[in-house]
Length: 124
Image (cartoon, rainbow, N blue to C red; front, side):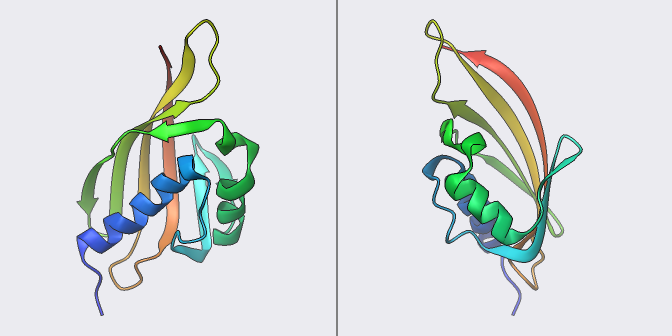
């Protein structure tokens, strides 16, 4: 069975939702999934990514994400969105524009690989 683009986008959306909900149990990670952020490996397996999203301090500061813009190119699902953090100083917080590309093959609609690029910005 071949997964539709909307099924694969839903897999990427589950990951994005888990960034702020801190509940990644239903994110469809392939067991060998890795995540590369700004050239550095930040996830070494699907289970590691799940544990990090559920309990990692680097994710606990995330308050919410903006609705992503998705594009599909073959097995790659690209999501562009913002991450808004909880900590504030003088009414401002450091946030990030996120550009993530997920490898989610149509014949195995789990997340196999994530490549992330972040651009920080200050928000009120």
